[in-house]
Length: 98
Image (cartoon, rainbow, N blue to C red; front, top):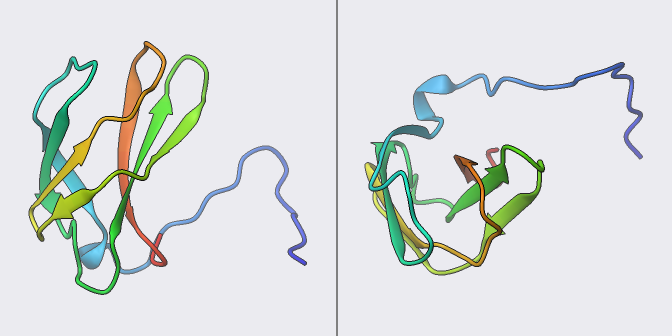
């Protein structure tokens, strides 16, 4: 059991920022389907598969991309899943790193 002692907002910072994923560019700013390409740093550390997280700015709905993701240390490609219209934050995490 984890005791939640947060009042309001909670968060954490991964201590080793030099190995955390960092996004630099996205291949398009408008898409309804197809492949999205991201570039950055530390997008694949070889120990785990990257996870792409899409968060709708308006509704807060989070979509975990579970399609095939191909990646290297500096690029990542994923197939855009079916999501509702809107603007999305794009995040990459390396499980179990976070």
